[in-house]
Amino acid sequence: MEKSTRLNHPPEVTVPADNRPVVAPIHQSVKFEFDTVAETVRFQRGERPGFHYLRSSNPTTRQLELTLAGLQGRADCIVCASGVAAINGALFALTRQGDHVLCFIESYGPTRHFVRSNLARFGVRHTLLSIEDLGGVEQVLASTPTRLVIFESPTNPVSKIADLAALCAVARRHGALTLLDNTFAGPHQHGQYDIDLYLHSLTKFAAGHGDVMGGAVIGNAELIGRMRAEFTLLGAVLDPHAAFLVQRGLKTYFVRFREQSASAQRIAEYLLTHPAIARVQYPGLASHPQHELARRQMSEFGSVLSFELRCGAEAGGRFAEALQLFAMAASLGATDSLVLPPQMIGARDLNAEQLRLSGIGPGTVRLSIGLEDSADLLADLAQALAAAG
Ligand SMILES: Cc1ncc(COP(=O)(O)O)c(C=O)c1O
Image (cartoon, rainbow, N blue to C red; front, side):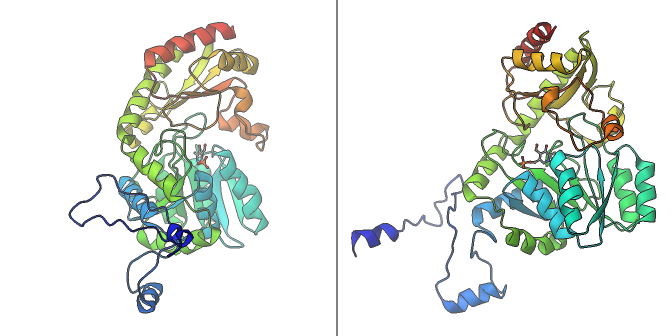
């Protein structure tokens, strides 16, 4: 065999069946083959298990899907290239021309945008309400046949809590599917509710280290089975190496989530006492208007909190620039602390009334708390608040 041939058919190293690696290997292969045509055909007919092409599945991405499904308490999962790919793919897979979708002012901006602009191009109608307007939800679902309701809890950036039991009951009564973007609460929470599909940005708490993107859709086997072919066609596949990094991140998921939540609670309580701050929004605070609901629904409240600076946007900008330990960057849920000043909290598609309902004020600042020592973070916040004036 010539060397160039050998390089493309390297020696196989097999691991004996009784000598397993402790960490699962990364199957960094796009293609998988069977020994015979007959077995290939049997696979194509769904008569035997196996793998064929990464865009459909791969052992490493499949391992992550099964891990996430178990964590969320559902039977199956599709992983994909980003949280946005999960949201858009699910909406695209589930809607048809003429369908109606209910979404919320407080949702993640790109979700709102996809429903309002992209789905609209394909003749999918929508209604936009506030997540607090349960009466409006009942009214819309009773009067307009609705394919699905897509919502979040806690919401971004001001941590409103959706009443999951009430929302699910009304959606079920009117035959609408429920899609919860569960990114802020994390895949270990909210599984006890009658929710059809959970969406996650794995980029956040699941991966946890801010170095990889991913998304997931989790639900029962029938619904996920129906959606899988559409996701394969859309092609926003998760690379096996990215899947490995998320799987590795998940090993420390509970330790990180609990520590970051405890630290966020300490910081929220400190900010509450600061004279420059008019309001602090964190579901773990007894002063949060939906604290009791949050306590019923959640075991931990997460790492994201926001607050309203009395002196408005300019002070918010000075505050963010003065921070030493918080990076002024998008995203959340990773080990490093982040700040979003008012200038970076975009909701440009909302009109004045919708903006008022959203709870975003002129001086709203969002923090995502990482794994730094909370005493260091508190000292940094104190000096930056003083510097902001
Ligand atoms: C609630 C929520 N959903 C989805 C996403 C999108 O995730 P990704 O950045 O992985 O596409 C984000 C990102 O910030 C988010 O905050």
